[in-house]
Length: 540
Image (cartoon, rainbow, N blue to C red; front, side):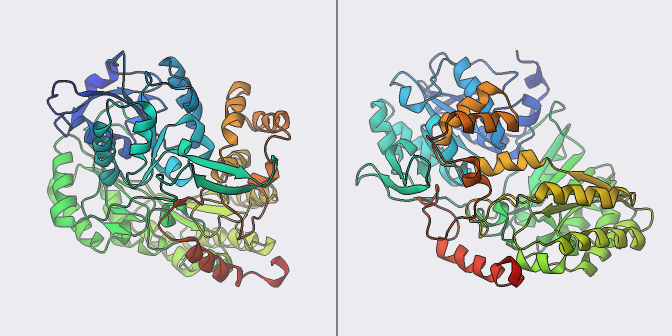
């Protein structure tokens, strides 16, 4: 089935293949419309397809290109944790064992990358042969070049050779021991001295960032051209994986990178997406707005990912309205100044209020806010301050439609809050906010608490969860399935509380202790101590 591919307009030129090019399948474990909208997937695919020594075929859950009968490499780009179910399904559809230990020299090397697998690959370790930890700009060519050097060797030799490449993690070459069957991780060590004791995430530090390599009407965001304005975030909110894991904050060069990319993309479409964790903190963002406000771009539809609240100016909102935007999204996390100090959210309630006023004055009809409950140190009065803040925003910007999307705090690896658990009171706190805000005519959209519990299992999981995840897949995708799997594996792995709710000690060996992120653990501990010092005495 090739129908969706017919609508694609490529912004790169695939290479002319050499004889004996390596057959490679590059998969996204979801439907085509979702996968082709992921900028990371687009860029990796184009990078691979631009090599003359690779014969690349794409695979999605619903469609695929003509696939090689004997692929040597099979790659997955993973953006969402629960897509692991689709990875297992795609492996089975290709007659490849789901367990890496069951693969022979006749099977492809199964590799994976993307934000989920870079953060904590351990729950998925037994399904993959290789993980690429970090930025593709550095890793992809190094990985393929290393594979070419051992292409005709046996599988064991290939994996040991690949493990020598910085950022390439081969989980089967590391032995994990546990305090007990139901206890935490005791140690993680390479199987011999030829394997690196630690794998360092690789960070691209250039100022030419990613841009779409394909535009298609079949994308989830129809015909959108995406360009990455910034990478990482300078704010370093202490719960935020998108900041801590991807440091340092990098910006695209406006004149040499951003504008040429935008001009190229707008030859194919009139829809432009500016991406990044904190787009408006680009130091030349104002000049980028001036560029887009030129008359020749009047018909361009413009959208931004979440923006820093205190950068929401009237000029920005006027520009968005001019380019067919109706709303803007800001992350405030909490209405409590104290909680924002604890999490290092450098933002005041006055600045949030001014953002709402500017959004209304600039002509936007709606303001979407992201909040969170269950953050470390949170008390009932902090929730009440969130309610008070939303009420005050309604008064400050009458007629502006307000939406508060709210999730539950989930600990993330490589962040200062990785040692905390999910607050078991979070579900009740979501219900409190819903009752208080909806009665005020404020649109409150809570994220599923059950999904947050599942996220925490995978976020802090170790590789004992591989068997657990296979069971869950067989039972069906629900929290009940996860609880059932824990019950069935009782005595073989820790209980739900260990992964989700328990606060871990600082001297605990973490499942990802052998995988080095952007900052060393000692630095994360210092950031954690600063936060805890701001807790109220009764919550210590």
